[in-house]
Length: 326
Figure 1: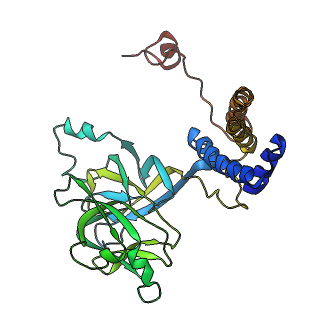
Figure 2: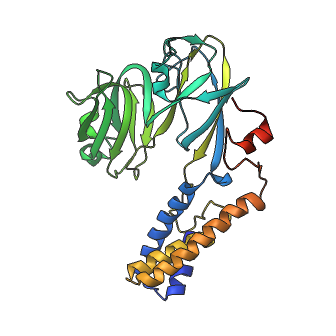
C-alpha cells in the first residue's frame, strides 16, 4: 500500500476523514516507519558495497583517504555492520583499545587486521582545503541571501567550529572562507536553485538541490594499520537508511510490515483525539504484530538458526556442547 492509501485506510477505520486528519496521519505513518525500520536488522534493511583501495590517485573528491586510512561510506549506509577484505575478515575495535597496546597501530602500515568506526561526517580530506559555496548568481540572485550553516573541523584538528552565514557569504568573500580537513554538517534554507560546496574552488563534493535543507552524512571507517602499497578491495555490510517514504505514491520498504505500521499509526491518531485508553489497547496489538513480523523473518524467509546454551560460555551445558572451558 502507498502512503496515501495507508493514510486513507487508517483514517477510514477511525472515521477521521478531514484533510487535516489525513495530513496528520501521513506524518504519523512516516515517523512510525522510521521507528519500525530502526528496531531490527531486517533483511530488507541490509545492503553492501565494495571499493578498491589504492595508495595513490587521491583527489579532493575521493572517498578513500590513503594517508589517513579512512574510508567514507556511501550516504545510503546508516550503520556499518561488518567489513572484510578480498582475502580475510576484519575485526572491529573500539578506539581506546589501541591506546592500551604497545604497537602504535595508528602509525603502522601493512596488512590491516582491524577497523574503527568513526563518527559520521559530510566529507573529509587528506589535508587542508578551502571550502566555498557556489550558486547561480545570475539567474537566482536572491539565493545569495539564503541562510547557510556549516560545522567544520578547526585548524587545531580537535575543535568543531560553526559558521552561520549566507550562500553568498561563503562564495569566495573574505572573511567567511573556511579552511578545514573535515566538514561535519551543512544546512541551508530552501533556495531557488541548487547550491554546491566546492573544495579549493575546483572540486564539487556536495550539491544541495533547491529543496534540500540538510546535507547527508557518510559513515567513516578507519583501518589499522593503514593499508600498505598493495591494491586491495574491501566489502562493507551495512544497514541502509529507510528508503524514501514521503510522497503519496511511496510504499513502505519493509516486507510484511504494513499491518504493524497501521496499528502504530492508529494508536497515534487515537492519542491525537485524547482517546488514551483505546490507544493503549491498539498499542498492545501492535506489540503482537511486531513479534509476528520478527517470526516471519525467521520462519518464512531463509534463516540460519543456532542452538546455544542458555547459561553461555563457561557453563556445564557449554562444556557439554563445545568441550572444556579454560
